[in-house]
Amino acid sequence: MAKVKIATTADVIANKVLKTSANGQSILVAKVGDKHCAIANKCPHFGLPMAKGKFENGVITCPFHGSKFEICTGKNVEWVESFVGIPLPGIAKKMIAMGKAPTDVANFVVTQEGNDLFIDT
Image 1 (cartoon, rainbow, N blue to C red):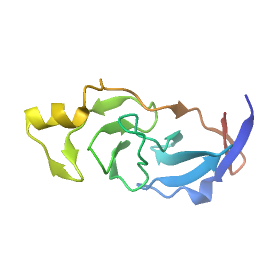
Image 2 (spheres, rainbow, N blue to C red):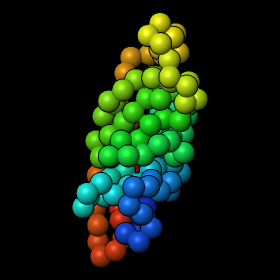
Image 3 (cartoon, one colour):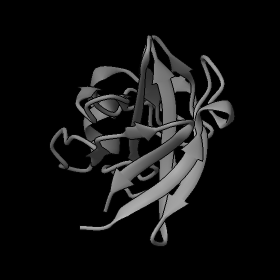
Image 4 (cartoon, one colour):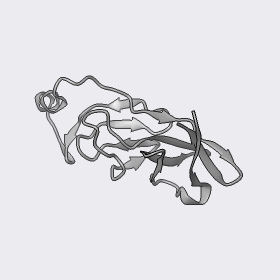
């Protein structure tokens, strides 16, 4: 594992996600309370980017299919709830999920040294 700088504390604005990269992998960084958190910018449903998704209360919503993930743990809290922002009824959720089971997104432990933020990749 290599320690990689992903941002500075000044780069991370409250209630917003910062898209950055580490070793060629797209990463989302946010501050939740007093803690900096990071997850992969890749929804496990179809591998689409989540950077433009709605972020509130420590949860990011995939802008494509509405799956929701805790940014500090990567834990999936809702799976395929919409299609490009339009809520789906139950049977349509199953069709859009295409048989894929709810899955967490990769997360990273963020460490801070001075004003610099790092993850291990």
